Length: 300
Ligand SMILES: C[S@@+](CC[C@H](N)C(=O)[O-])C[C@H]1O[C@@H](n2cnc3c(N)ncnc32)[C@H](O)[C@@H]1O
Image 1 (cartoon, rainbow, N blue to C red):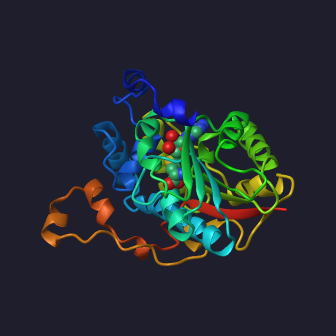
Image 2: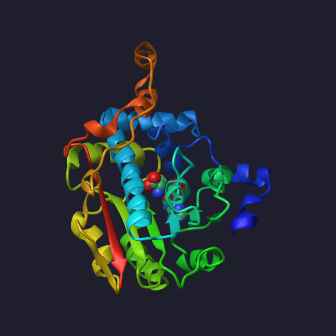
C-alpha cells in the first residue's frame, strides 16, 4: 500500500533484505551503473559479464526501450497514466521523470515486491506538482491487489499504459499468461501494454552461459521465444500488437541512446569491468548483442 508501505518500520524492512545473497533488482542496478548494490550483487554481475562480456547491452538496451516506449506513448498517444510493475531500483530516469518531462500532469504508480526497491522508493515519489506518483509493495502474481491499490491514484476510466518491462521472465507460464489477462481486463479502451522479455532464442550459447551463473546463485529466468512473447498479446482478449510487433529491443522504433557520462580516459582505464559499464556508449550495439524482445500493444 502506498502510504503504509513507505512508513514501514526500518528495522522490519532491514529484516526483509538479505545482503548475503544476490538480488535480481540489485544485480540489474549494477548493470545500469547504480550504487544501490552490495558485493554479492557485483560478484553476480561480474560472473555474468565473464560469461558474456557484452551482456550489459541487454540491460542497458532494455532500459532504453522503456525510455523510448514511455516517450512515444506520452508524446504521440497522449497517455497520462502509467502502471509500472517490476519497477526496479530508482535510476537516472524513472518513468515519472520521462513522462512528466512531456506532460507534467502524468500519474505513475510503481509496483515491486523486492524490499530493496521499497527501501529506496522515496526517490520514486518526486512527482511534479501537477502530477502524482505512488508506490505499491506488491507481487505481480496478485493482480487484484495491485489493481485495487492502483485505483487510488489512477483513473481506470481513462487509458493507462501497463508496463511489464523485464519482469515476466520471473513468472512461470501457468501464472504469467492469466495474470496479464487479468490486468488487461481492468484497463479501458485505448490503454497500452508495454512488455519486454529475455529470450535465449537469438543467441542460445551466451544467454544460457549467463543463465547458469545466475542459477548457481539461486535465481533463474524463464526465457521465452518470440512466439511465446506474442502469446501475451494474442491470448489476451481485445489486445492487439502494434507495429513493429515483437522485435529485439534495440530495433523497436530505434533511436540514439543518450550519451554516457563524460570520463577521463586514465580514470576509465583504472576501473574494473563492472565499474566501466556506466561509462560505455551503448550506441555501438549490433544484432549479435541483444537477447531481449520488446513490444507494445493496444487495447480495443
Ligand atoms: C530486471 S528488473 C526490471 C526493472 C525495470 N522494469 C526495467 O526494466 O528497467 C525486474 C524487477 O521486477 C521485480 N520483480 C520480480 N518479480 C516480481 C514479482 N513477482 N512481483 C513484483 N515485482 C517483481 C524485481 O524485484 C525487479 O525490481
